[in-house]
Length: 617
Ligand code: ADP
Image (tube, rainbow, N blue to C red; front, side, top):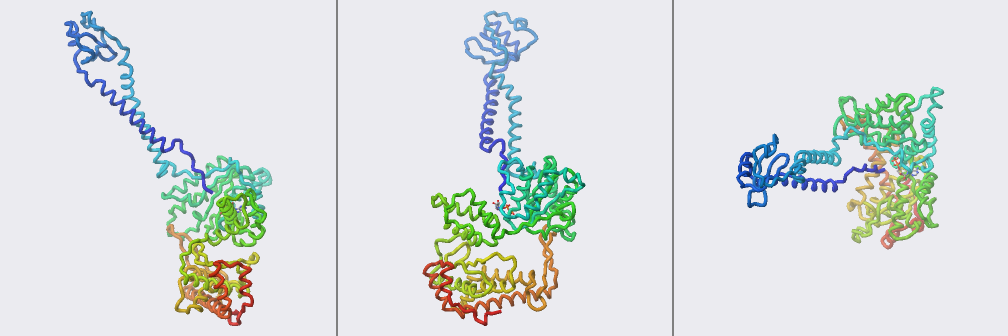
């Protein structure tokens, strides 16, 4: 969720305009005050009286401070004298009654005020301008003055509060959190029987599964304010800032208790600390310590509950997970088929859709997608509909959106030459036939040689149903079908003519799966079977560290085993392709003609495909 930027009082443009106007005013004021004395010559009061008595002066203009002198025959004053206020002009010796005397109560209206402006207003304006410049520097650039403040956002008063009803599926998580809602709503009920209210709940699950949404819903259900901050926001350039942000955040929440604090990506600050080499002075560590101190400092009855989200609970510092801290854990997994349908329903709810939109089928095809992915598909479908100026979302929009989200946007303009197109067609047909023939592989859903995203072409497999577990056979079949692309190239063009087509993604993906099989799933052969090999991930001196918990010799054996699995997969793929070369040719022809071939047609083309004994495990 994108936080709303708080509005500043004065926009940049207004500030510039004020600045220019002020410069003019100050300039004009200074000009006027100085021009006031410009053409008048200074003289003494005795000289004025003497010349007035002898008839050389026709008019004297008297103000509080001075006397301006107009000589006989002149129209305007040409001299001035500082006034002696101890007595009147007559008392000072003026006898000539013909001299016109003009008394002004002050230095003469505008000029007086300009004088005042010069003395008081101008400095005030200058101070104002300095303050404004200072504030704008603070606002845009360094935020120097608000460093120690947390950037927590308060959502308590929003009208569009989220409740559990807005969250489809995730029933177990909702059930677990129902209890937290109850704590916040009726704390007395629990304290009456001496039960301690939990302080921290860890929400663990892959990105996009609705952890943020669920935290908001807990606040929404309990009708309490919700403060949200991301772990990475705690950590800034300067040491100590994170810790002071934590203090600020907790004090805000305590003031608004009962309340919820939601810390997203807690692993950004809460990773396991290194083995002491950081010296305990590193910024992240201080921030983490401050979180622990604050949580320990909650008094009973304070009623602030911290929900924290992560997708890697295994990397968290054990200190965070101790009783009294994040001692409760709610797992939020990827949605199953039923939940996917429910999530799609929620997101389609306020959108006009045609009758042909098949939500059930889409839910079936989207195994492995998170709630956020599904929301994204629905939104893409709506965008597609709007772009063709239609009023209702059709199934075609939905399928287009699904494919765009799953494998990237279609590149309409092909940069490929005819030869490259043919090579891509063979490559994809290779994947397709191996996937089709091997018994545990998923169904071929679609094959295309239209570029999508980064891929030159795509062969798309979709599992028939959601499966929580996969056999070693499934993994081996998946490895073989991934190697099928390059295997086809080898058989058609010869081993020495292989291209980069497979290098980038296919081989990398296969190597990743093979390594995962050996290291994390105990699927290596011989005495590596049933063993797992882990690395200890931690932070030291601000860097991630991966410490191997096995010997160099074992590391070599793992590498050998990974290579063996990949070779086996490549050999099986070649065997399948050799046995079904005619069918590969047939699909290639069809791909060159139509660019995209759908599931039904592929089944038709591959009728009678053989599973040679040499490819069997
Ligand atoms: P996370 O915090 O786990 O990364 P979010 O809570 O930010 O995930 O979810 C992102 C978006 O995905 C939500 O705004 C919502 O639109 C959608 N979403 C995820 N799970 C669900 C769900 N169970 N029901 C409805 N929408 C969901």
